[in-house]
Image 1 (tube, chains in turn blue, red):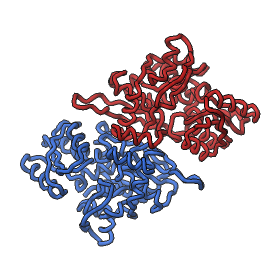
Image 2 (cartoon, chains in turn yellow, blue):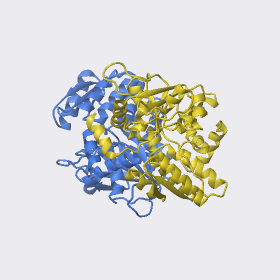
Image 3 (tube, rainbow over the protein chains, first blue to last red):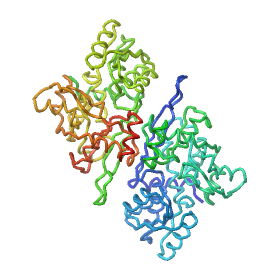
Length: 319
Length: 319
């Protein structure tokens, strides 16, 4: 079981390998009406490889390298986690193999390759690539690193919670995107176990709300076909390790419609001057569409920035 | 004459009114070839009002408020300085009047108005709006705040130099855009007078290089018609106060072509996940086009992010 001491150890382990991300203060645009309280944006899109995934991947890989043994790691990913594992492996000097779907986006595949990873393609589903990655890991005698259901990965993502407490005085609420639950699991664990009293609110796209479904059903359930522009949150099922953390530590889960995600992505670029991917914009979308009220001491985790430039151009033109 | 003590006093004065800007580490994209040393991006585009101008304006306005007297201030601006003065006046509780050209961009005018400023239009040239603003200031008995040729403004911009020294260990070179020279004047003064030995390199668009022209002529000269996409750097002449600072403290001045500015603006959005306006992208443009070599310990000031969304969409689509 992951605990606060694991998150604290991750923070020490990441020092020198991965920087802290900036947290900036931002006023949501309002048309007329009184000025709203400033919101704190935790800019994971400005991290190396462009997402929070670099924290968990680096923690997991550094822990393996520390304990000797591993000459390389294997993972399955259609996106940010693969690049993060490639980055982490290069930093600690071991090899990385990333299994991607046959229809993986070229920039993300190139990103992992540019960081020195071996890229293997397998099938079209997450099941197919995970099976292939786990088989490769067995063949090569290398550890397999899940993108969210992995203790060291969850502990690494939790370092965001510790940074937020240091960066935001008067922090009262944190909004966090939920995909498989590694990000919110780590952050909520850290904020609650440290006794901060900070509320943690999970945000999911309406069309891909597996954590809300799990909360309603009293346990993980599988979604049929998640549909959302937020490609990092198209998860069919919360993790076995992350679900108990969500159940215990997350105060509330809200959903946001697709048009709010699109508008938030454009608003972050236009007014906050941050390029966020749609998955990273769901938290500000929750404020912009009114799913969560804007109150003092509110932070939004902007989880990543790896958006297709053509999509960003389209969203800017529509705004 | 502005000195290091003024910059240090500005830093104290800005505390609580304006945050420090983040400085992130970024690897320039390379196609094949070895990885380049990381570059440090000083993100003034993430400051309130979206540019470094908020520093100088807040320092000038707070200094006036501190010494009692002023119930309001007047300025002339086609862009970022006007919004910055409006922001600063609101923060310290006095009025702001901003004189803009008749063809001012609507978003920038709306920005100043949304921050509570009175907006007055006058003519099409900088001369026309400065004359009108100075006349208004005399009529109303209020101080006029120049956008760059003002000691407190220069001292405020210089706080970037002090922050860089605290944020970047091993800092050796800083690239700074030059418009009227307030930004580079303040930064170079701070870095040199503190005895850091950091090299300061000014960057101008090829089509609007009034500082380089001044250096060659041995004093300020007026350009005929500056032409560049970098609207914040379309200055016809360096300032009377800023020129001696540039002459004394700036090690080198380089120019960048328009296509490099366009590509750098797109690259910052795609790969660094930062929205920069073209004026803010000239420093990374200098590295991307080879005008300045990428060496360890190099920082680029990304001076602002207020770009027309339609232009950003166009640059992304072309990249």
